[in-house]
Length: 340
Ligand code: NAD
Ligand code: TYD
Image (cartoon, rainbow, N blue to C red; front, side, top):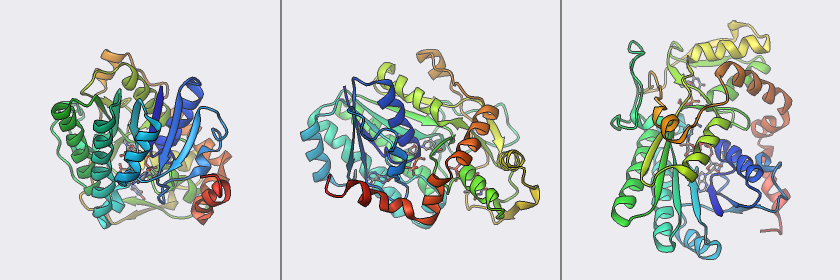
């Protein structure tokens, strides 16, 4: 089978490309990425040169380019990770979120409609459900929870989900959607909570905790997310939505203190800063459908996963130091000049 994985130079897409290239040597994996600030080809070094892998630089909102690519490559499966993914950026610049997350998705769906595919998979988020109160630990997001978004980011992701389902019903495109909780693990861009705190703690810099740090996120290791998507693409039903999460709820303060403790740094580095506007209180996934229907179970619990992740950032300082210094953005020119 031939896969186009969009956004494969980002955090989760990059981990998914590694996973697929290693696990399915007989399949072809095309990584399509625009290389925005969040795309980093240094993440793909372990798979470069593999015969079942190829990188193509391109924008999912570029209709002519996308149609041409589908015509040329005739992919069987599309997995759409490409997105603007940071809530804080969506608050300062919502337009790009509409363009990439909504219009990029409809462009891909139109190309699927024109060329015919076996499956279009949309990588979505639990943030489309809004948030849950802290004093109701009995409540979880199910696939039936109404969409109720808070941020421009989550609104753009919910809109994309609605288009995906509309193309399924109206045009019969075979689709699936997964809605995962917060991911952590190797290769996450250091603007997100966990890598930001690790890199700053290592430099003895203040760790900015929004509000009082009581907001709860349901953390899933990126490997478990990749496994779930693989299962859904191969065994999930057409037109189905699956929630992905492993019941690993922690407050931001707990996460930050865990990182400080693991690095032997003092809690005095914590600095409480002005809260994010519209800040969601709690996310918590009920993954029962995925477990029951597809037999998925996560490999990692948070304690093991966070320890390994911290160790990965210690062992791969160059990867994130290049990002912080801006060096990573020159990689494409260096490696691909004259090749694409
Ligand atoms: P990321 O920001 O690390 O990576 C996004 C990638 O998309 C980058 O490589 C970027 O260059 C690429 N991209 C952006 N605009 C593009 C465009 N117009 N055309 C082609 N490529 C483009 O994001 P991530 O954290 O890896 O998230 C991937 C997906 O998973 C997103 O759709 C996100 O909504 C979803 N998701 C993320 C999380 C999480 O915790 N990070 C949780 C659930 C769902
Ligand atoms: P983030 O990694 O941005 O993911 P999301 O907002 O999509 O859940 O943030 C995770 C949590 O950490 C969220 O409640 C906001 C909080 N946060 C901080 O307290 N300080 C920070 O510097 C960042 C980036 C996030």
